[in-house]
Image 1: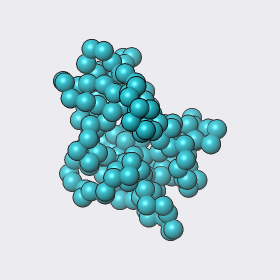
Image 2: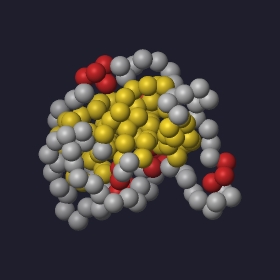
Image 3: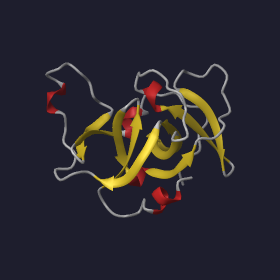
Image 4: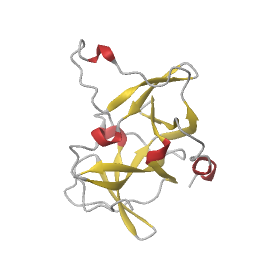
Length: 165
């Protein structure tokens, strides 16, 4: 686990965890992230959808792990020494569940640049449903897509999952 990141996870309102998936910069609210794990072996599930990598054991709990690249319709990438699993809390099927999300690299726990997160008003005009994007922010001038985890996992079939306490 990246202790430096998780140790700073409670640093205040407006904080986000930033990470990379397929060369794109994403963020989620730090309050939704329970842990950041180093990559570990994942028990493969039979007949699982492409985005579901399998299950990890986290202190006795079965946590499903999904590949964020595949979930977003991107090509899968090779794992590296920087590949991480974000353990996040998500609303799913009327309950809060814990899910692992594999990312290419976690950048940092931080706050977005002044101006915060803004909706992508042009999405309708472009006939693009960015429903999994809560908004667009900037970090040191770079565009950051802030994910809406609940909407991202709305239509995802998951195996029996650990309910959040």
